[in-house]
Length: 221
Length: 234
Image: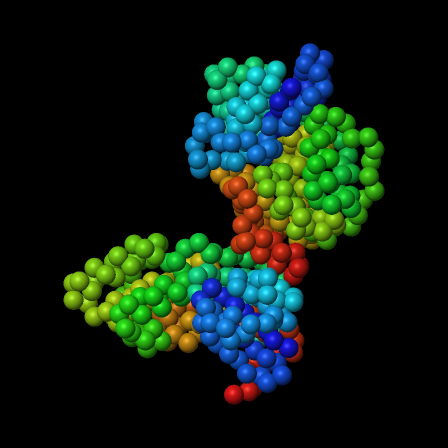
């Protein structure tokens, strides 16, 4: 069975037969996987999945398989959106999904890292943060810092710190937060978010867990 | 043609019917009328509908029966004055009826869309008979939305609360009834964006663990996903 979580930027695809989890750029998905998916979620899986699941439902169901507590907060920071759910006794208490503002998203980091030739998963951790009420203004501040001789890696780390702070606020400032998505692999983001809340990264395949019980994480190479 | 908005008293609508005939139109409802540009762009879509519909219908409207009291909102009062100044024949009304009729549409097993259609139709003509009730699995609290496709997300076992239930009960300014929900029923608290009722929706959703949403013009993917998830997982 082919399971797919196709976000705007990154896709996570797993053949449960082989257990191989393939993380690839969404723009390459149609070439590598020309057929339909058995179960899909995410913007780009719509219309090419035999069964399509709402992303919030996939996130919540996936988190329920990975988190033991009944009451917790889970956030998925995607390439272009952020999905959040606060559960109480394993029922959604608060749901939110922001897909309008780049100040909250991973793709902005990737764009900036790409521009400066930095590895966004190897940024420093910094105590400073750029206010990111607006992503565009945040970028402007970052560029100003670089003009004023701040090292680009440090400037981007401050941007990442600002994003982590935004995520914390978006989630209602919880004491503990489970994180889903590609930023689970970004140490600068994790350490920045960790300044505000007890963060537990669950990985970037949480939504796949939510698509079907058969998926139990990558087992194949 | 008789235009009306909100929930004017039945007797005023009957007077209008006697004078101008039986052709009523609810100006609150989106009809595809082009924007008149009279109201600010970022404004309650229902109030914008009222003005846009009125401007679009123009001379075909013999009268506009306007709700301007607590049963509507300040916006309804302001819009009535604007329409008057624009040359429309406006009858301003307030509806302070506090004698509740029993509600049966709100608690029936009809589709949510059908429930809201029948309830809002009851403003101009009495609904013929009581309907059997169903056990609620979910609740919808609020006013009829600008985009009715929102209602398709709910199962028929959804009970109606809030202002819409007040309309069925014939008491559109009854704040106590508007605040009533069944605490054990997972409820979506809906308002139009830029509506004063957002305060009530947020308060009630927080108190009862419901989902609070607001929509401006049409249902977004984000809203759709939230409501779908809430319904599927509660």
